[in-house]
Image 1 (cartoon, one colour):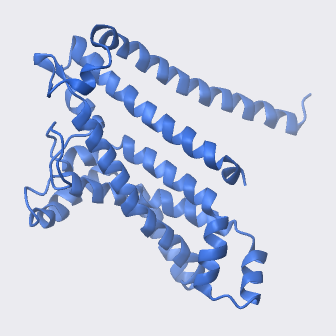
Image 2 (cartoon, one colour; image 1 turned 90 degrees about the vertical axis):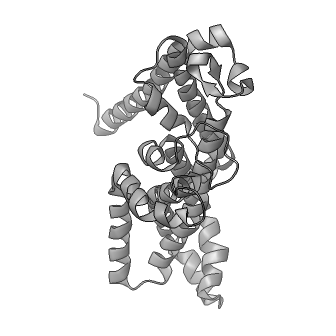
Image 3 (cartoon, rainbow, N blue to C red; image 1 turned 180 degrees about the vertical axis):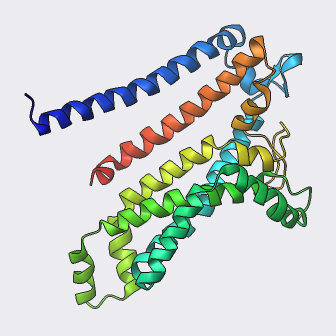
Length: 282
């Protein structure tokens, strides 16, 4: 009979193979559904057509790609400083009871459904943003709400990364006379950068995949945005809006959109883990 360690090895290997197999199946499905459009149209029309009008044979994906990148990267720029500051506050500045309460609030924020964020954005944030111009349903509103949605991911992983920094390092820095902020800046954050980077990466991939809140807030106009106050439509929102009635080449092009999202996420994961894999392993 296999020992407990051998059973654990078997189970973990099987889980790893299953997880990798699921990813490969998803990629295979997207490739199969995208193939008709790629054979019929090629790649060039998606980046050279003048607009997005599928019934007229116009399949310009550039406005959706731009809106997706703007909202996702913007969300990280909003979330990361707040989330890292939250983790530092919990460990180095908050009293014990307040730290526990703060963690619970961040966890609660992470459990709020995206449609609730969308409703809050429509009712509360959009009228405020509208004072800057337009209807308030634009990329700026979507970016702010998306940043709040991904903030718990960065905050909780940063919290765990900071908690894993050896206490001896912190105590040694304090014994040398370093002030609290100097310890945080020069000792803790560099030591925790792997976990913090993992949190940022996961938050970015979640932002790239978010649909409902962005669909409700971005304005849903398939045109190249000229500023953050411009309405736009992300790749995810475009798929959600049009897949229900799309047919033939239109449907296949929507799967090409999904393939582009998968490729972007893949590039981010491979690039980040390739540069910081050793840090994550620690």
